[in-house]
Length: 353
Image 1 (spheres, rainbow, N blue to C red):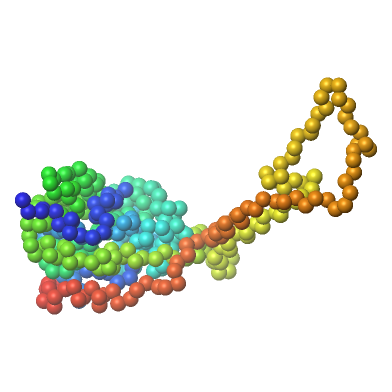
Image 2: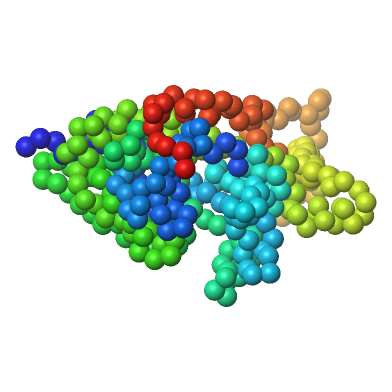
């Protein structure tokens, strides 16, 4: 029987591992606006797909992505407004802190951000939600279409996605091994307003062209599509401190690193013994029938006192300074992503809408 798992021909870690879920130039992507799937390809073209689509997942961002549009409006949580498009106030694809490209970072880290807690916003249905949205980014190929696209699984579809990936993780094929996400064609459809359902409909290996597309995607291309190259911002202050500084009429300052406490030197004296290296000996008590020798009768040593040989010890390893805020590498985000991705798509792909 022919091998049905093309994941055995792919280098790198399994895509299914860690796939469950708990700004800048936008790459080619799949939109779910208005309850329809639409491909956005380079050059501003769009390709309508309808109510369902068949895709193959070829890569993922290992981190949970975050998106905060800004303070909520009168009708609840603020979301993207197509009639008045604005970039998000804060976002992150690095799993640690606001992106270096975020215009209004809300907190030094995502884990401690007040926008990242339940109840920080109320949605249009009156339910408590997080003001900062969670979603997972994948790169995929679409059956019948050239190129590689960004596919996002948002919070409303987490339960269905986890059920699908959990089911796939339990499968074993006799003589073939364990299937990965890249091995199956996934049919994605709408099962509610903005809620997606996932169903495996075929093995990728059954379609030679789809197999070729899936295996030709490089790790570098996937990193650009899902923005795994995102870098955290450095020296970020909480928004509350920024507002307090504005009220004082002074610019907010990045926190200074805490001072490094110098270690106290060893003191070789009776009042301050040198720690565990020179423990104090218990006093020797005279036995029964033996008198204690008066201090005046103790023999006095002549000459210089004997030099005490100290055991050699390894110097303590230097402790890194705890610097508040997130330190980013000196290099910035790579440029030219749009031009690099445009080469993946033929000139004739899609039609303008």
